[in-house]
Image (cartoon, rainbow, N blue to C red; front, top):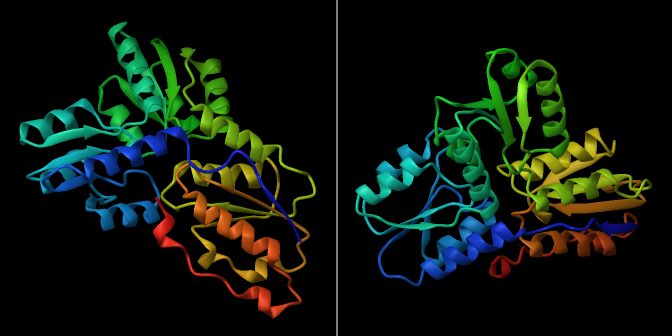
Length: 303
């Protein structure tokens, strides 16, 4: 079986920065609490917990609501960012605030604030209830409108002038389609903010080798950028595609009759997990049961 590791893949600079900030903060005295998953990968969250950083995560609660559960020590803002009101609330509770927001997310927040000062309403393409989108919308809930589909654009005031931007981990193809549609029905200025790491990973998936007959995307189901890689593999490259969190989830029946497997991963997926899958596939032989044995996940190497 031929195995291709699709490049680039794995950690982006924002994920590396966020993880390093948590590791450095753990050295400080007092309890350390991460306000949500520092990045969207449970293996990383678990590895940081072993080092002393506790994560508070509840999909049904906003960052503002999660803060009610933290009463002492240091709170870390995740790579996805948070609204200024969240940081202000944390400080008002006497908490030490450490900000691990991705620099690309900060750049988007700055853009939004500048446009609001110009008196513009902002159209924000994002995923509902995603922490990055939540943080952006909290900047000004009245004048920032979440756009998840073309239907959301239809409900807007056609007499207003808008600025349109997006969550950094969205599909560049989805963003393009929504921006083009918005230009047809609204007076809108486009300021796309898909981060470069997300864009080049998505383009690599769309342009993968034609003879690849199975694609495996490695990442956490919470990760939007990982899910977008899988959807692009299916919808743009028209490949048989599976998304798994680790080698444990690899179903050997998927490999039957496959000649060429491509492997990629989300920007928050530990490289050790992806490499383990690539190494396993390289030695796999559907006619040799000895090659079916999966090695244990190297938890000690996650960070």
